[in-house]
Length: 188
Image 1 (cartoon, rainbow, N blue to C red):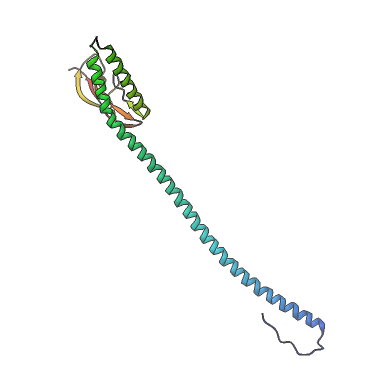
Image 2: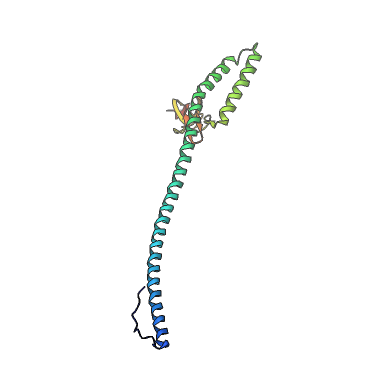
């Protein structure tokens, strides 16, 4: 706060004194205003910096959360996929046993029990997401079928699956094992 030295005249006119006081007050207000503006600018810069850091941190955390969720889904999917691959072999053995028992007449109870267990295994695997790849009468698709035989025939259109040698399985869009098939080719 700056003080102007006034004449030390005690009889000075009071009007001049009022003007001097107003002038000093005005100068002090301008000084304080400049000081407040610079402090306000500095605080605004700090706020902007902290706000930008917060926004970046929030975005990083959101990306982290999405990545973790995706990884968790992939792990669950991978675990189910491995379980299904292992169970396919069991399912194959059930189907081989079922075929072996088809012509046995005196073992109806064994066949009924076997059918029940087979049905339960198929239902459990289906609930896990296992799907049988369609073959019979379908057009050969190398994404789902593995042609291990080709038979020249005029009975079926070319590239049509004549019969299935081993079932194929998928989970959603992912083929776990392609179907082994016999495919029709043109005669000649």
